[in-house]
Image (spheres, rainbow, N blue to C red):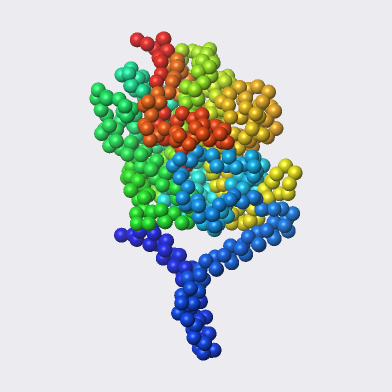
Length: 598
């Protein structure tokens, strides 16, 4: 049986905690032996107690002095520091549950700049919403940044050594394994989307016909889960078979709650979401996360469910591969990657690289998180915006009916012609980017861009650097005075050429540079396909705020938050673990299109 996380944490910390008082006590004994002077007990105790804070103060002040000196030597300055308690201890008491993603930076940035230093437990972290600095992190200075040992350690229990948490050669290995699977011919096969979309929309329609509001987020998460599992494993986990939940204020004619909760895919999805939430809280605390989980490792239970769900699938794929005759002379593409064979799933493809169950599980979990959560989030926030902007929904339906028709299945060429559909998705990605925050660690001293006419900003080696995509996407100086308005036209009219074309790094929903999301086009295709099928079926959508669980409604403080600009208008409660989602679900009502009412 493993020791509690807090005990392990204290055991590792103990040498550092004990060294200063032991040195003080040793100095006291040595002084008394050599000089014969007896130092009072109270003075010894006081000196031992104060020795730790004194050493910490000296170390922190020395590091700050060294960083200022190194910055000056490079003609730079350090990013302005956020105000706070000594050592940033106040961050421990921040009410994360009521915080809006990116809210703090949005309030402070206009006065202090878009790149700031935040001290947390006596360690400096840099947070930026400046496109030139994100460009440096992701592209031009790519080799100067990595995920970092702390990030890898925090993510290891959840994502292992998978592509999103790995660095160096391990990242290259995972990238090489997965890259061939996302060629156009693989992601343009819409049979899979059509099957699962039809199932999801049929269930959604049936629930609405009962007179109840329905949780669009839950439904679309099940759709993306079934699509992702079929695409990745070749095994539909059939999460839609569990049924859709009822709103808290409804008295359902038949309840499906027990079946829905105990269905294996539902248990997997719930456990995986819980694990992501725990991991997100750990990243906030960094190496000190055991302080919040002193006696119980909160990841053990959900991850045991996740492993119990995935391991049989992985074992079956490995056994199948071992039973096959060795393939000689396998074809490779122009990059030297193994070509995906006809009918292969991603898992079939991966077992040709390794049969290590841990590596396979890590990679599948990484791609599942991307394939399920990000697309589900994009569709959820798109429907939220369509409910809030019926004129956009009307125009989007007109385009769908004109290009595709009321019942036909969309094709790859249809999507190329549907400019407004892509604009709607892009505008949603701008305001509700699936990954609102990301992080890197500097491996060597680097310079960031400072204010327009000011000196550059110095980033010391070993500094954790967070970049807030959501903050950058909502900046008025980058997107125009209407940046906080949902307007898909900005991706079609002169604003596109005025703002985005000359500075493409102001729009980074899928990252950029060598680590750009491999599944970008897959996400666009899946979201586009589902929206077409949805709006062929329904002609209007509205929020049912009474169906929203009371604990999931926006806090009253949001309504009076004028500085953040967007927060006060929210009717739902966005939250973020690794990705953005709506806390408590998105409960809506939809009206069926006339051709679909029978």
